[in-house]
Figure: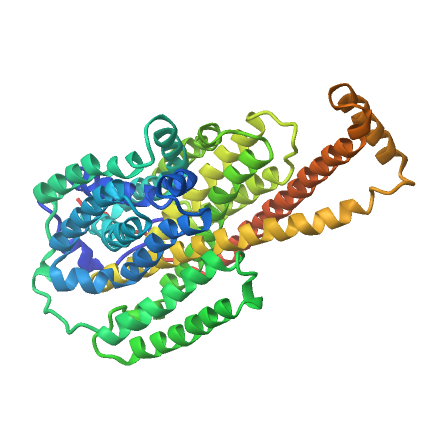
Amino acid sequence: MSTGVTAIHGDFAEWHPAGNPWLIAVAVMTATFMEVLDTSVANVSLQHIAGTLSVSSDEATWVLTSYLVSNAVVLPATGWLGRYFGRRRFLIGCIALFTFASALCGMADSLGMLIAARILQGLGGGALQPVSQAVMLETFPQEKRGISMSVYSIGVIVAPILGPTLGGWLTDDYSWRWVFYINLPVGIFAIIMCLIFLEDPPYLKSAKREQIDFIGLGLLVIWIGCLQIMLDKGQEEDWFSSLFIRWLAAGVSVGLVAFVIWEFTVKHPIVNLRVLRDRNLLIATLLMFLMGVILYSTTAVLPRFLQTLLNYPALQSGLVLSPRGIGSIIGAIVAGQILSRTKIDGRYWMAQGAVVLALSMAMFGSLYLDIAPGNVIWPIIISGFGIPSIFVPMTTFSVATVGKAELADATGITSLVRNLGGSVGISLITTFVTRGTQAHQALLVGHLIPHNHLYLDRLSQMETIVAPHSGAITAHSQAYGLLYGTLQQQAALWSYIDQFRLLAVVSLLLAPIIFLYRKSPAPPKYG
């Protein structure tokens, strides 16, 4: 029987940092939490940003897209950048750039300035997740790695969940600019902690600087940039009926193929794709993509469901969703304890997490319009528990057979595919909800016929209600309008139900993939 915390190459045990591991964890996780929070904290502020800067809502979405593009470009290159500059210097520089760019975002007086600042913010924030994960994997001894990944999971999973709540509160009570200004004290604290406690391992100090792979970097920018813009504008442009979207798709295809070929052949690649020859890391990459689809799509679609169909204000919808953080914290702690202190095969624990996640999606698929907040809160908490049940052991399995020199490359790639999965999930579920609503509306309209007595009775009831306020002449047309509004609500509800049930199926599909991981012997015990 294998344990959930799998054995990693013995060279990890050769070096331990001088500082307290938990203080190092606080230093790097503060920066990571701040960065992951920023992927969703601005979502609820877009309407306010558009109004302040006198731009349309569609133009304001570039505030999100610009960040995701620059963030995604840096993610897979963090291993090379850490070796080139030194991980400690590189991480502190990224935190400083992210914090400075946050200040520029808050001061922006035009959309162009805000987009430029968000690009800088994404460049600074892209490296924080994978570098933090690599630091924590090296800092803690093997037998405590499950607990350390629980802490990492709490930061990565809870931050995008709390983002809409925090963003709604700051925007409603203060200003959208404080969504960015709040990063300043957090960033300064993280820099100070990293300066005091963080150090580079010996193999990084002795590493030789490699030549810059300018061609690989250019191809990376092309295909990721085209993909993010295509996903952001696809629904607005009616996808492949648009020549613009078709050109973007061609850019993604050609750029990605050329990038993969180049990175496998060049001597010093900007992204070391050769690490994907490791079976566990390859499986983790697929799982991380699907987890990104599930996590980010539900985070995006649930606030929309609550605000458009249940008429919740932004802050209240965020508060209803925030208990997922409670479930995530409990799930991460339980997973860390079980995988570190028992002989449970981590794959079985991940599989139960997939089943729990599917159950929560199925519960969302049974929602209706006349529900209390508790009907949403319980499946939210359950989904929060299921996600770290998968994520905690997965982060350990993914690097179980990866050498220390390739650790940063591996974490950079897995972080990239999680973000790409999030972008794909948000784009697809938005499209499916919109088009599903249209399809259900077309089906429901077929029931509004003169021979349907239920329809005629309902129409008559509405006319009776409206007539005292508008008069008998206009009551008939107003009753039609109210009935059509009810039809649109029901069509949208069925569309949301379809998507939640689809996510339940995707969650169940994680289970067979999980068992493709290699079993490993029990981790060594350190005295």
